[in-house]
Image (cartoon, rainbow, N blue to C red; front, side, top):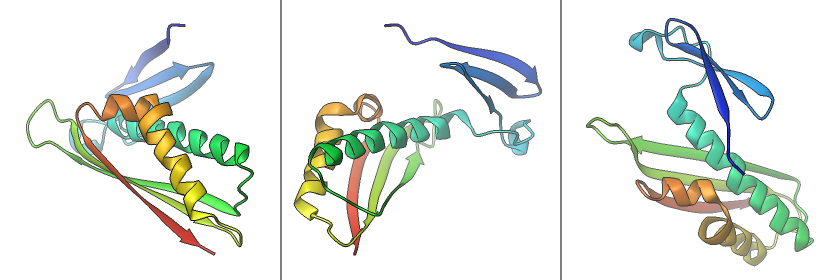
Length: 138
């Protein structure tokens, strides 16, 4: 199956991007000629990473019947200094709350996502060093 995206220029640096029947606005920071009307393209790559690995982990933990109260994923990344500016380091924090958290199951789910299932992580890992940590509160 081929992925398809359509981007329509709407003025200045902004584009309305259609993805899977959904539309979002992508724009540049005012410093670069935009109006900050939407997220930057590189940050959408990180959002894609969060969604990809997050969905993996939720699915795997569901199959393991591992309950949790909340799951939040935080990502920080560094860009190269030279053009083309690419991510060189990406760090993910998988944060869970709950009374019956099982660290071993969570570690296994995250490891499987990062090493086997998350295609976005595999792609970004070609240019960036990806690290992660797991935080449990409960």
